[in-house]
Image 1 (cartoon, helix red, strand yellow):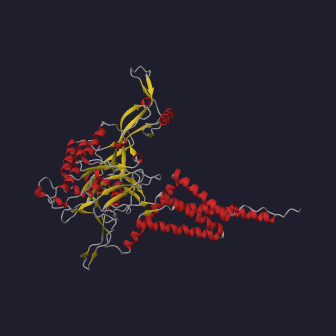
Image 2 (cartoon, rainbow, N blue to C red):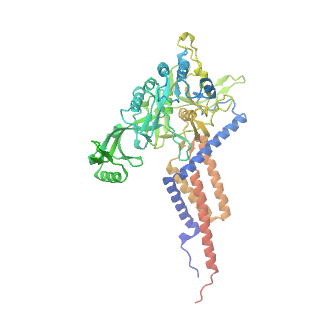
Image 3 (tube, rainbow, N blue to C red):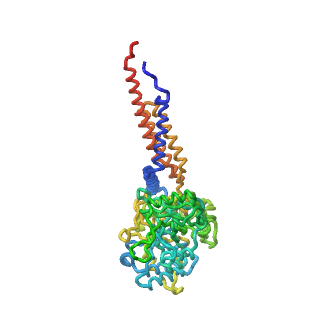
Length: 584
């Protein structure tokens, strides 16, 4: 008589062992590879396209033509350096005196209460102009304006305290302030070891600053902007053989030690250093770090060789979009709280009331305005109070950007997610220094004006985003809008995604092991589709992002594995049943 298998190997029970193995496999892939992360990135892109597609169809059907998008700030205006501008002023870069004209056009109005909130120039001023007069004109215009924000670019290349770039960067900190309230594991915040700040006169004349860095995901699509970057500035070298157990640095002022390997990689050193840490460090550097060789008398024979450890002091540089938002909310860099891996807190945001000119608590409109038949405003829509802005950031300091639409056209008649006006339209309107000739307003009261490339032939400033190629200035606009509208994408915690993964694997295992395979297949497919619509609904209505690709793929793998197991076990059972019993 065929031997009966143990109960655990029965398909209806062993399916749960298969589910556990699938869960372990996907957990390993999630923690140790980029495969699943790239797949989730592609699903996120699909969520964006579905959301934008629905909005577009609604407009085409005429349902919301007279209603503004309540998730788009009306105070963001892009001034594009477009084909029209290049046609008027010549190829890029054109004379810097044009930037002075632009700044003056906005600052030289008779009613200063109608001024812009900020004028961000997404333009490099890292080298002197060929004509020093042009630099002088721009700096003077910036001083008189007081609203011009400039960018600094952080780089992977090293900068040391006291070098020219460091002096220029310090000018920004000294005149505009710095972020100091940083909590949590700040060493995980993305670090950069060099920078390209604006020339010192520009930095001291600016009304604010911030880094303009974006970094792509593993698939080279730009979905996030680092709200804060760690600028590690080299202070000095320390000989490895001079380190002793107990050596430490002052982490309260963001000092840290690191060593550099043969490939240029930087490795942090935990302090205070224990005797065991020191032995491991010596072994690692002996294996992978270059030696410092000293030939003091230049005779070609080195007198000494040794390993060195680098001593760094860090500064935390805000994204330009964070600085613009702080300025809009009348808050300073010193008032910001950063908790690495959790959030950046902007307390008590205030905005200037357009009627009274007084600062009032910030609110966001949540309901549409009501108009009568003659299009006169009858009642303003509902608003919600915003006592604080809490920007969610990952351990690297990045915020996921909530993109609001496809790239805008430079043509006002074309599609524009954010309003785009030609740079030249305003740069040509400088009325001159005589106040008698100044206009009363340029209709940009409290707006954040964002100047940047808007011509494909001007510069390599186009990047792939979830909604296609965009110019850098429009990526900044989307990031800024995410903050101003308190419209953040909240990523489900890892434990939530892992719990869903486990539940899905167990559910599919139960279905696949107990029902006929054809029914199990259609139920699995239906569950995946229902789950997708649920995940998409959560993203569309609440900007809550839950993994889809990982549990969906795990469902398919679990289904196939269980069905294959059933086939083999059932075939074995039939084979055993067909074998005659041996005679006694």
